[in-house]
Length: 142
Ligand code: AMP
Ligand code: ZN
Image (tube, rainbow, N blue to C red; front, top):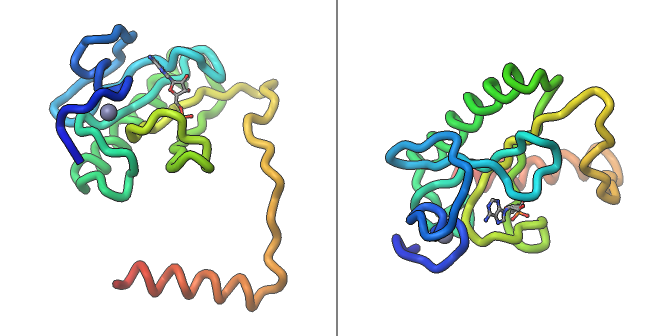
């Protein structure tokens, strides 16, 4: 982790690159995505440079979600959207292109095509599903 970084979002935070700002406070910045899934698609980012949400301090994680939630509500009301997606791609094979944590707030409309169309996986059986959940719970408890 470093406070100064050359990534595109750090440059936006330092006003070295332009953005259309929606909200800013001591921990986070929100602005419109430059290539939106739908008009009004925005991004909420922490001011600290972290590649992964897992290393972001908890107060920043909390603020990120709280601001995204408020932003989503405002997006629904102002754009008359029917729904929204909150999306966080974490890691390149999960679709993360900008290596600075960002939460997408994507307005959705009844006549939208689905954004996500991944090849779905299936559990072999209920036991495998339980086993998977147990592994996760164990790690959560550590
Ligand atoms: P991801 O694939 O989750 O890393 O998403 C990165 C997002 O950042 C994409 O939706 C891009 O359109 C958006 N993006 C990249 N550069 C900029 C920029 N300079 N201003 C606003 N949004 C950007
Ligand atoms: Zn950065």
